[in-house]
Image (cartoon, rainbow, N blue to C red):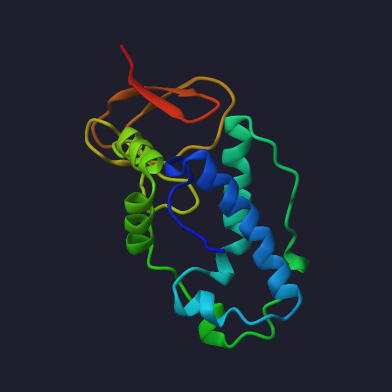
Amino acid sequence: MRMWMCNPLILCRKHLVAEYNECSMFVGTLKKGISVKGYIDNDLFEPLSLLQRHETLRREMQKRGYKHDRIIEDFQIKLDHLPKEYIEHKIDRKNSLKQLLLRCEECLKRFKQFKDYISPLDAFGTRHHCPSCKENLTFEDSDFEFELSCPKCNSKLNIIPNREYYVYKPFI
């Protein structure tokens, strides 16, 4: 079990579905009071991000048209038996991304496809970049096409939601 904590767009189908399922397994482990020391020591688990990460993965699966059937609620995550340093542990996102890209050719391909438009280390998939000036762009998920102006360079972008990812095209 592990949490990759990279932008979910990068994850191939296998890694996306696996991490989604593993988040549920972490909930079960925490509920039973089983030690997560090995996961923390090996930089595989970030307890405080479990709920938000699972929801991010669920949304990405939904965008891609994959089946998802679990929702984790706050009350299901029990951290009271963990030491403070375990609870506050943060995964080294750069190292985790490096490990993922070395292990999986499909994830590497997706990384190369999206790296100009996303923040690869954004574990919750909320930050996007202007393709012209690389300024951070913020917008909510949408089911329909809309226009956005970059606040820095004023480039007009046509944001087209796709089942798998957002496509950014200069507005002409």
